[in-house]
Each structure stands twice: as structure tokens, then as C-alpha cells.
Length: 280
Image (cartoon, rainbow, N blue to C red; front, side, top):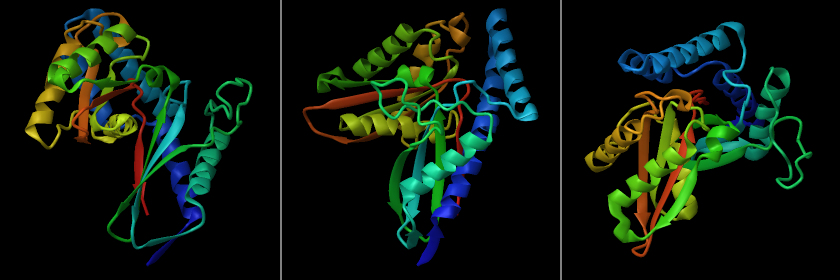
């Protein structure tokens, strides 16, 4: 057994929150560069240039990529041969607290959703998801999500007969409905199957995949490409002001489901597609 302390986890979480807040992942930057080169709209090309410049200034000047520094979701892959010497939730929260109180990061978490003055003052608590895996290591990913992109998400319990066309109709319709509110172009994670809450989890977890990396199975990779084409064909464009690039990628994950159900969830991530990963 390997012992991992709460202090080690807290330090790693703090480092990852800082990295995610100030540095756009290289794969997202590359996707934005490709989108700018392919854009046929001069306005959209200019907006993509501003987004890329924003990322450069954020990293160079140690400024947040976006003023909405988000609520942190933490995905933990915990080895079965790891012994935690401390409470995992408390350790993650301590890491978030360290990052958000030591850095120029907005604190946006309310203790009580109906009491809007109940700001916790340190951006805790985080949302923690744990998966047990083989081995004696711990892998951790943070995904700070701002309110604009998070609010665009949706879950649908479709009739099984809706099939792939029904999934596409709902997601494309949601993109049209949201327009520029979620700060496109970004990435859309899609969860298909499971149960209502698991579809939503899969949709968010899909955002951790490198931008544009296709699903390992052809059927789902084809659905990703269909959604990418149909969403970009809407012409909503960067920041909702028109253009060829409404999204950079669609990532789909799926799970077995009840024969009477077709759960579907979409999780939107804006152009400040913040995420960072590390391990112990």
C-alpha cells in the first residue's frame, strides 16, 4: 500500500487550479488556431484572434482567462492500493481554498442556492467525483466551470424511438436556443445512456478529453462528427456574432441504459476551456 496524505492532495489541487485558471490547454489553443485559419467570416476571424490574444495575455501576465473563475469539479482516479491519510473532500477543498485565496481569482460559490448572499468566500466546496482503479497511484483532474457555459447544459429523457436523430435535434436545438450566451466557440460534452444523473456526469467528464480526440468506437465518433457539422452549420459563430465556428469539438460518452429510456445530456464548455491534470 502507498500512503497519500491530505496535504499532498491539497497541494496538487491548488497547483492544478492555478494552472487551469491562467493557462489555456495547448490542444484548445491549437483548435482555435485551426478554426481561425479556416474561418471565412472576417468578423469571426477577428474574434478568434482576440480570444487567442486573451489567452496569451492571461498566461504572460498571470491573469485569469475569464473573470468568471468557476466552480471547481475534481475528478479523482484513486488506486486500490492507495491509503489516504485524511479526508478526500476536505483535502480537495483545502487545495481549492489555497488557490482561490492566494491568487487573483473570483470566488463565486454560494453555500445556499436560495440565499444569494451566502458566498463561502474561498470558492469551496468543490464537486468531487471518485473512480477506483488498479494500482498505487492517484490521478486528479480539475475542471473549473463558469456560470455562462454551465447554464447552457441540459438533460433530456427521450423516448427510445427518438434514436440518433432525436439526440441530434435536441442538442442542435439547445445550441440555437443558447446562441452566444455560453461564449462560443467551445466544446460540447454529450452523455448518452445510463440514468438521468449518469448521463450528466458523462457529459461533463467528456470535456476532459483532448479537444477533438474522436471516440474509440466508430459509431460514436460518427455521431460526434455529425453533431460538429450540424452545429457549425447554424452559423452562430464565435461569441454568437456569426461565422463558421460555433464549436471546436463534440465529445460523446455512452453507457448501458434501461430498455424504456434514452437519457441524453449536453455539457457546454466555453472558449476558456479550463482544465488541468496531475498525479501522485
